[in-house]
View 1 (cartoon, rainbow, N blue to C red):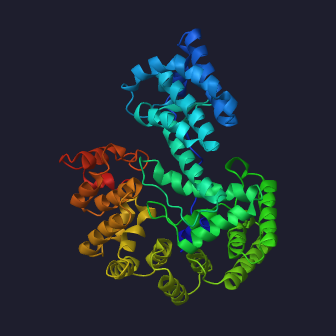
View 2: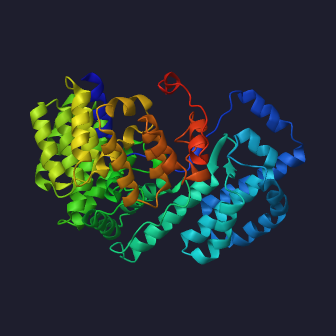
View 3: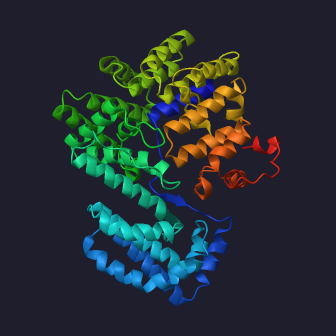
Length: 489
């Protein structure tokens, strides 16, 4: 029960779904000193030229000032001939050190990122089209480089800015009632779409733009709007009740966001979304009360009171009620009652099923109970939920193997294909369902659905399983690694 409670507390602390730092990933080789030697082995002129373009690109990107566009075009004219010649050599994102050996390629990508962001930020989508095309076709693996060895994946950030731009336009023109996310074009869209929704809510709250925030939240909730991969947009909107990523360490930043939520409630006294935002914010703040039992006790009481006052108006409130019940170690019967009531209202909200499975697994014969529950879901009207409820553990071979051992194969296969029918334009969902099928021993299903992903398989998701991703996407029948190797993942 201890491990279960830790999982519950962690999930409560982050309220719903969390996501990684925007577009930033540190890539380190095993030998830091070797990287430094390789870097310094370049001539002074080469180093200076590279540093100048990258430093300028970073400045242009962070300032997003249209007055800098002529300077960006001038810099692109200098590096583009060499960058295009290097384009065919690069087939995947390199390390920070390796990138310095094809500097023009990465300089061009970094400058194009700054240019695209500047144009998109001011709504000049048509003017950005040629630069977007160049990144997608010629510089898909380019990096913006920082002296600290941090890198920004150019294409990943551009996908984010595109979705954020479209979302902001819908919010600012009050057209969220018509908004739909476009099909995923690459492996980064599955991350970018929900992240754009979360950041948009956070920024509107931080800026005190309560009219726009309320429009975004209300439409996401009422329409039960989803991303192309089937993720509930309202999950991410409500998750945005926090300070910017680089300020989350500061208590004053959290206090400021709390003040903004109270202003939202005051400005919109009848807004149920402002009330839900306050509930989520309170859950976030509970993370810092672990060593203050009295404060934690009051916060828990406040959360339970808010849940009752708001009522089951959306799946997130019912979901939080379920998590609180599990965290408080209430009886299995009371947990099951909450789940059945919530699932009856929101049978297509997979978070409910996933955490009920977590709770079931802690019971005697838990895996048998999990299998029975999944079979029930797999034979229901919403049979796609069987597969979708497994997505949070899709990267764990052991978890998938254990939890599906008592599931009827026909139910699992039908559920996977039904999910793909419902969300046919998602590469990210195909990647995860392909991994679930593979780990559940359904190799033919994995190969069938991953063959349509092709070269756009998710490198981060399939890390340490690259050979399997290549085998499945290229339809090459090669001998598989023994199960003992996969079980070590």
